[in-house]
Image (spheres, helix red, strand yellow):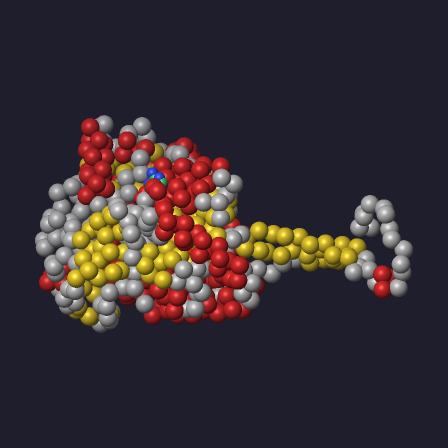
Length: 537
Ligand code: NAD
């Protein structure tokens, strides 16, 4: 594996390449010396009009490895001129890209998916360094995005229109057309998957695109831009700009941007949905979550405890589909001590270390917030069964680590229940009946994901029918659908009504035109005009 600087980074000063240990399953871990190499001096570049360009930014955001606090790169707040240049380049590219044949766009998707697969380890390495995930989990992040690109390889079929002869010699048919320039605003927790929900679908359907990755981990998107270029995506079709609120405001306000895809927190999402919509843009926004796992006493105990442990603490709880709330029904509450033992057994460490289960949180601020929420639960009368606040990670003492934490006796008014903690913290509530569990789940303001664990088909049927949550798992803890479906959500977890990826994604990035055409057979011979209202009879 090569460690040449990324296209998306400018090297200020050279550094020693980290030593790798490559095990039987490929890259498994870095040696300690690789982690503590001299602070690298990289800056993340803009990607505008087919060029990786250094920003003239006055404001820079330091990006630190969450396991070590070492500086990985500096992310610019792209300047107003750079943002305008990205929009100009995307508008210009749209004039020709919209006319690229469907087969040529399909070919680019075929090449892009092959390149992403070939660069899986490189993408995952960037994610571990910038975001903190474990290496296998980072590969999962890439793979779930890659599946969207693979689906877009079936593009010709998805964009087929409809046609019928509505009257003699008169046909009505639909054309699915691209919108123009579209923008994407991404969160930190899936640095590859979420940009891949956006730009491949946008581009394949004939749009041009401006992506703003999270300022906390743009590295994977920069590699993806490099791969898109290699796949032959023409200059200006994909652009990447950086920053935080100023860049977001630009995307919301710039008239040439016709649609915005957003994934992230409630606060930013509601704001972007309101501002973008007020400017007449189409906006899809996936927001926060508090996903409830309902555990019935008849469930398969071993499967359920493993599923809960993985879904609550995997990715350090920083998944929008993490099961962060467990609702034990009746006697199932007696499984709590065993759940604590499984959670305690998880290894907390840096993402390249062998067998790491739980990596660091994204920032010291995120760690402090999670610790404060744990403390608030104690202050409000809950009981912490497993407390990860004092976890020690040898060799990574400066990392933003929080060990798996389990809180019981939680009540719905408590802050730890009301807020999305986004950390390896599982809050547990107990109820007596399935009806109470359903009511509890439906009363929470979020509706992103949920799961029921049971061996009863009737119980699961009732749950699926009565639950008001966008993604429902039956004995499946993280029921994120594959791209032949769409990523759904309900209530406060979503704004806008056209979902990400799948046929929904194609619908989001296109608009329908209907054409009614008359080619009258007798016009070839008759010269008399009709002045009556066309009734198409
Ligand atoms: P975030 O809202 O802080 O950041 C997301 C994007 O919004 C970033 O690009 C950021 O620059 C921008 N942003 C942040 N604050 C802003 C503000 N005040 N004004 C304008 N723009 C702003 O989210 P995050 O912390 O990066 O990601 C975690 C959140 O994303 C969690 O709430 C998680 O549930 C949610 N999420 C949801 C889904 C889903 O599909 N429902 C998927 C992944 C993550």
